Length: 134
View 1 (spheres, rainbow, N blue to C red):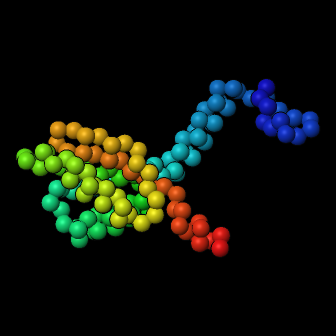
View 2: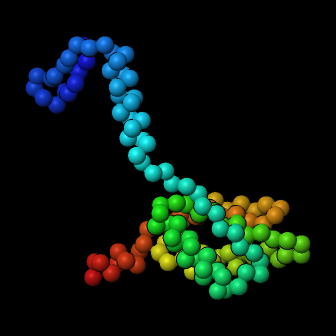
């Protein structure tokens, strides 16, 4: 005996094979999960000598990824003597993150032997919510 709905008075029940019922429920869940779009992690790679214009292009690309509902991994590769100037590399990475319209939320910052990685996702857009309340 399986309870179909408990919200009615009296509750609705039916007699059926419980294994078959479980299978139908799992099948229904799998179908719903297959329709959902999973957010991917897209990658953007910049270098120490990347110009300001190229950073603006990367910022627009990141915004496009956010509209699709994806997270973005920003990789800053450092080669040779560039590794000695990590502070300047961090400034360039921060300037790229400041160019992105709307709010962003940093999830991870990793510093490795080849450079730095930052995973970012779209945060709340505070500016537009303030304009709407006025």
